[in-house]
Image 1 (cartoon, protein in one colour):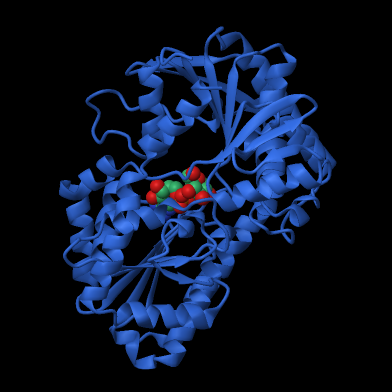
Image 2 (cartoon, protein in one colour; image 1 turned 90 degrees about the vertical axis):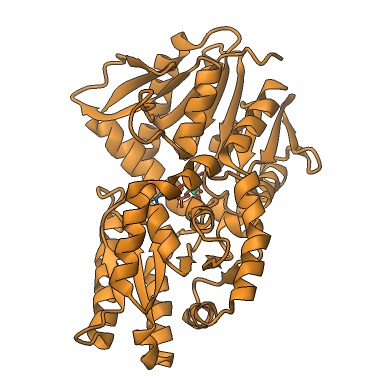
Length: 462
Ligand code: ADQ
């Protein structure tokens, strides 16, 4: 084991580091991985995001501020089958417990295996003897095994950013066993929470007949042992809270405050994705206004949701559904001077989000299922400790395991949501402070730098 081992990060997409001195240093996961890469003079490998006529295997490298990124183009067919197809129309819905949305197509499964093979083929020559390799997320589950089949003996770790579903759901995936067996070629497997880890261990024990030690997370099958552990991801606390004094965050805060005046702003910030529970959230808000029609003058809900994965049909449908539901609430409840729901279909910078979060006295984070959910942590990090807002959080977000002092809700229940909104609106300062104090230490201390170093420490030790 040596701290000197060079690091190779592999993920579907690559975040090119910002040049030193560029405005607004990079934060979040990309910032933390770039910091680790810089420390260990490593390489970040992935898809460029570009579609080429044909996949050429050509690697494009770029070195910025001590970090080298290496990217490849994929063909349109690769992107359709691997990215839009198997990753985002099969694995994503299934891993978020949405059997109803999961599509099982032989062709996309083959495309997924083919692209993982392309990654292995192009990445292999870049890996040096003592490097440690860290693979990220559901797009690249079989990559470790593909590298092993090419003779790579290096330590290889894998982190899954999304949930691992219960065995009874997971077995609906054709060739599920083949997929999981590839995972046992990694030296270290990371999950967001104990719950997802338990589901994975349960699968290995009951479906594969592996020898599993729950205490250490060791899984042994066919003479090979891997270790699986929970590493809850956090935010880049220093970077995010450092946005407080930027012009962008102040301006955003003022914009929201001046446009909401005496009404309480309640905010939701999500990628437009069915896992985030957005239509269900609007049903809860509608229920709240049904119960308390007069409170339309007390509360304004702002939902920021930029479109994502627009080539996938289920994502087009969710967008249409949301527009319809927001329109219905506004149609039924608006007055000439009051519009209860503002639905904004675009993204904002983290500095602007910081300002919006700070101006909003209620943060509504209600995914139906989420690996972790960093928005819940960012919302809290942006609060004024003297006068903090209230976090309403789905009990089905990975973050709920660490954030029991939030107002936890069942996002499927409009009554539960409506009740939580009423509670949050009327919550006395003392209770808001107590909840904030109980929550803020995990947001501050279990941050993304610790997450990175904990995972790499354990991978180094393998
Ligand atoms: P996501 O599903 O993208 O990530 P999340 O963790 O909530 O979910 O958000 C990631 C980042 O995107 C946050 O920093 C957030 O601020 C930003 N973001 C979200 N909506 C935005 C908007 N409207 N405008 C601008 N920025 C926005 C996946 C998993 C999660 C897991 C993360 C990290 O699905 O469960 O927490 O990876 O592991």
